Length: 167
Image (tube, rainbow, N blue to C red; front, side, top):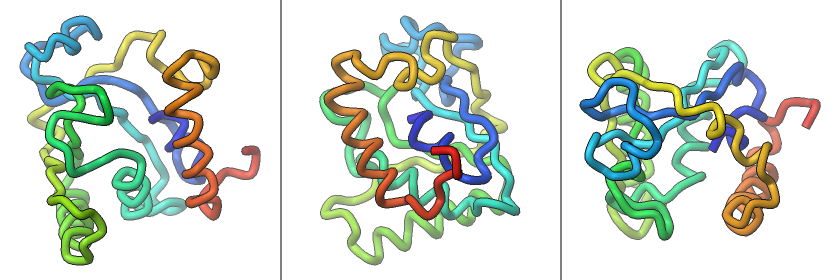
């Protein structure tokens, strides 16, 4: 997921982590059990003068399946749920409107189950260092080379107008 966002203009930093659960400073192993109720997420720092929040929402809704509850592909559990944690009422409204627009346009054949929740009630915890920039560090790892690479390639084409020059 990092690679799908950090290559876009205006995106300053992307950090893999966990949010939405009840345990402080959870480990990857704890999150994987499903007992902490955290979701695997990324935190994106961006310049809103360069890239609009709506553009990030567009990428978000196209890089995963927002219609499956607690699941992404073959990965199953609450840590794989589709969720947006907003930082203010403007982000909340934009996320809700974007989600409603996709539903109204019948972009997906099934209902969108993406949760939209306030970040202030769900602290973000950075994932362990080995999870940061995982695809860039492990491009030949099985999951990365078979699933992630094709997704990255597809979205580099679809959102090419948003790419940083050095890509």
